[in-house]
Every structure is written in C-alpha cells, then in structure tokens.
Image 1 (cartoon, rainbow, N blue to C red):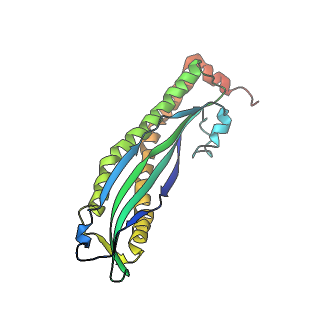
Image 2: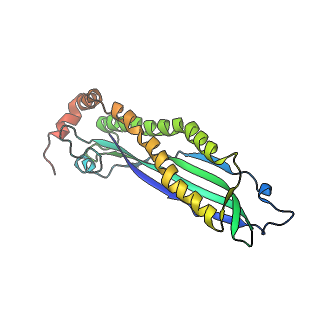
Image 3: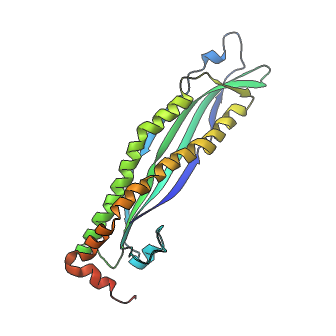
Length: 228
C-alpha cells in the first residue's frame, strides 16, 4: 500500500542590485534568465516499529475495512524553487529590469517504507510485504523521472528566451515569487499527484490475495490472532 504527502517551498529571492542605468549599462546588458530542473532521488528509509493496525492510520484508505495494511510506502511529493537574480535600476531608481536564475528541485522525498512489526525481518512474511512495498517505491521514482522533460520544457518556455523583466522598483522579484507560488508549485504537485494511478494498479485485489496466501498461510494465521 502507499500514501503520499505534499511539501513545497520557495527559497528567498537573492537579488544582486547593479548600478543605476547609465550610458554603458542598459537592460540589454543583463544575461538571459536561466532554468535548471533537478530530480530528487533519495534512498528510501525503513521503519518497522509500527504494528500493522497502527499503519492503517497513516494511509489515505484508513476508512476501508476490507483490507489490512500490512506494510506501507509513504512518499512526500516535494517541490522547491531557489531563485537568484540581477537587477538594474533606472529613472531615479524608480523602475528596474531584472533577469533570474531559477532552480527547481522536485520529486518524492523522503520515501519511507513501513512493515508491520508483527512481521519481523528475516521471516517469509516480512520479505513478501517488503517486496511489495518496494514496488511502490519504484513507482514513485519512475513517475518523477517521467515528468522531468515536461516540467523542464514548460519552465524553459515560460522563463527563458524572453526579454528582461520590467517593473517598479522592488516589483519584479515579488511578481516572480507570486507566479512560482500561485502557478508553478500547484502545477508540479498536480503532476506528481498522478502517481496515485500507478500505485492503485500495484494494490490490486489479486496482489492482496497473493500476499495473504503466501508463506504457507503465515500471514493469515497471524491476522487471526487477537490484538495485543
């Protein structure tokens, strides 16, 4: 089984203010804005301290009573923008033009794999459950990788190749930050959230039945034991 959470942030805009416009300095002297997209791929961590009954409370399907949450892969959809920029001030420093270096780091980080403590490492049941959860981990990673080209193209199309940003003094950086916060972070999270489609395919009724019948009935026998 899997469940996901969202995390997003925008690092503070680091702006280098250049001299006011003069004969030798104009907006055309600014370098073009640049975009860099980095895929986050951190190793999955493990947590075997929860009982399988406690794991139910960590899932998005905690109201379902037709399945038991024997294990869990929990990924946090993360997107973080870091921005550096250069600005030129003109007209008595009342207006400015700017270019930006925009770096996006995105992916699923952290990813934590849980297996109910009733199934200790080294047992057949633990291995079966853990193997299933690793399929969810791989689904998280494959989904994030598949988005890299689309996200990169969209950001480059928006921010690269155009003229410098123009506005009132102090306005260009604020305008960029609003756009990243209100348009681009929600867009990236919508794309990442589509991983649920792949995850649901892994959690098929057939797969649940296979795990339940594995290990010569070890899992089914344990599930019939009263809660401790």
